Image (cartoon, rainbow over all chains, first blue to last red; front, top):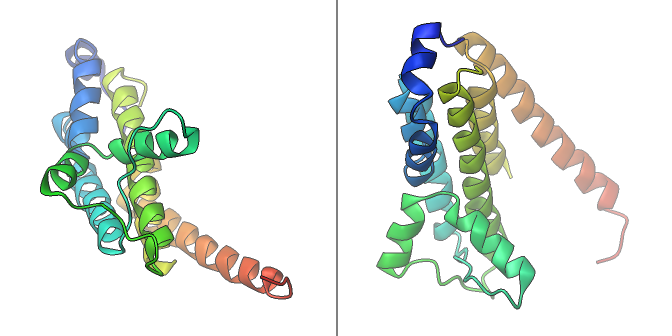
Length: 131
Length: 50
């Protein structure tokens, strides 16, 4: 569905705010832009994916600049927004490196964050009237 | 692998398609592709030692 000229006029003033919102709460950007079904699907799917990763003993990686790969994984983790901060605050996500599901859990958490970054870019395109 | 494929397929399908019918078709194709590629890769790597 392409944005109408009226939509474009309305939305182009706040694309960065929408990006911030879309990052902070998965799907919120699409919800804000009137694409509610997509917003709900993103919220449910990405939150579940993140929660599933934590349940599989995945780890929320720390920002360690001395270890570039760990730092990159930390950036990917933060990409999911609010669920990350909730988990951090609740003390979840220490990870159990000897658990058989550890790497699977990490994959779920990282993929959830990276997919949310794509969702943010999509929300930006919609806000700019490109889609 | 199946659950991961399901989540990723759903997000990609909803992200790249606007029509619900198209979303279902593309999502199903993507999901099948993930599973097929996973099984194929599994068999290709099977002869390799750990």
